[in-house]
Image (cartoon, rainbow over all chains, first blue to last red):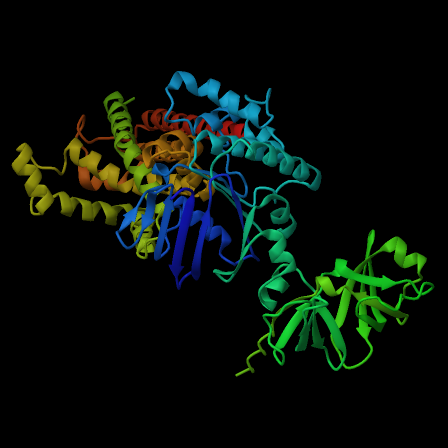
Amino acid sequence: MHGLAFTFRQDAPIPLEVDGRCAPGELLALVGPSGSGKTTILRSIAGLYRPASGRVAINGEVWQDTASRTFVRTWQRRVGLVPQNYALFPHMTARANVAASLGDLPTSRRASRATELLSLVNLEGLEDRRPAELSGGQQQRVAVARALARDPKVLLLDEPFSAVDKGTRSRLYQELAGIRSRLLMPIVLVTHDLDEALMLADNMCLLQRGRILQHGKPLDLLHRPATVEAARLVGQRNIFPARVVGHDAARGLTRLDWRERPLDVAHQPQWAPGTDVAWLIPSSKIVLHAPKEPPREDSDNLVAGTVASHVVLGSTTITTIAFDGRETRTLQIDVPTLAAERNRLGVGQRVSLSLLASAIHLMPAARPRSPAP
Amino acid sequence: MDWPALWLSLKLGMLTVLILLPLGVLAGRWLAYSRMRGKVLIEAVVALPLVLPPTVFGYYLMVAFGGGSPIGQVWQATFGHQLVFTFEGLLLASVIFNIPFAIQPTQRSFEAIPPEVREAASCCGMTPWQSLLRVELPLAWPGVLTAMVLSFAHTLGEFGIVLMVGGSIPGETKTVAISIYDRVQAFDDAGAAQMSALLLVISLVAITLTFAASRRIGRRLG
């Protein structure tokens, strides 16, 4: 078996019920809100945390197996870890920090190898600085070089971009993407930032309270979440209940009854007619028609409503629309502020929208919240 | 000036520090990292010499080291002489009453090392020993130095326990602190003043050096 495979089970103190794998060269993102257990999973792979029950294997080598009472200590596992705040050794220079991971090399080779690795992360000339004399982005690069110096079998990145400013971050993304192509090891990235996962990850695990809600390609997870819970975690705001009426395979459509309003969506025949479902539409697939240009007759799912609120956030304006008819939930779209101003979009204004049928995704109906005890 | 007493005090202080250095580092580090349940009880026992009156503490040590106690009997059987009223007995007592001074500053300085830094050391492939020598001690040494200086200074100054366990045998257990008391008793104010001034200077120099060293490393790690 090539690559990383892990299984962790535990009830307390941190509940865990996860299985995952990551092939060599693949970047797996663990995404979830704080407290979802993503950092604990990373620490468990490194052997810094020992869950009640678990198994970690890398390229056939077993690092942990509670069934056979195997537990390899962290310093005997070849893991490269970039912790959230980098955790550089403050009393050592950048070069010494990297050389600290090169314990397997003869002493005479360490300094030159450390210098090599520092140039790989674009830190030539800064080898003799101590961490306190480096910027956040530079510290992150030292931490990456130090992790790679271990010649790791798996590279673990714990929110490595959260402590740097936005400009540095996008530069570091590019650098990571550049280094990645040369690394033939599984990479596990912990992040709460969905955009980061979309940009960097090949695969993604969506976590909630120590469990994997969904696993798959980042874009699939974003546009086709399996459950309403997953949809909310990936930031989908427009989720509504409906009932399946029937399918029209010839036109590639499924027809829904949405609060006594017909709604055409992409053909999804796995949902039998009569089933209660939840549907979502990404805000980018909603067309807001300008009042001066009435929509064409053949537009998808034409609906009308009233602007209920209007919040300007810099170049984007978040507009909430209340539908005519029986749907009481509102719809949220991001409108470029310039377009909103040009169309004099304001609270109380009547609007018409098209919901692109091909972008509407169906999920099992949200379970009714259990009544309060 | 009672030179034999001064020399005895310095010897006692240095040997005490030498014995307490590894003990303080290992025990302080263990207390800093341990998440054991009974830890607070152990910390209380470690701190006990700070609050116990020296004469009370000295009395218990004298009883514990005496010919009637197991420790005293084992010592007598092994070395052929008793433990109380000897330099060895005094050294053992000194090590025990300095435990809080040796352990507490060390423990605090190990506690100040971020856990992520220790974890990073183990991810770098360092064994716990390598981590101690290459990462933790270089970061914790101001605390270790403080512990050693405090133990040394405290040994020079301790009176009650030394008198109870050691008596006042010249060249064997008569330390400079006891000698000062003797001088005062003998109305030799000049002698007492000389020795007191010397102890004052030694203590001040030791503390100043510690502070300077801690500040220097603080700046370096900024």
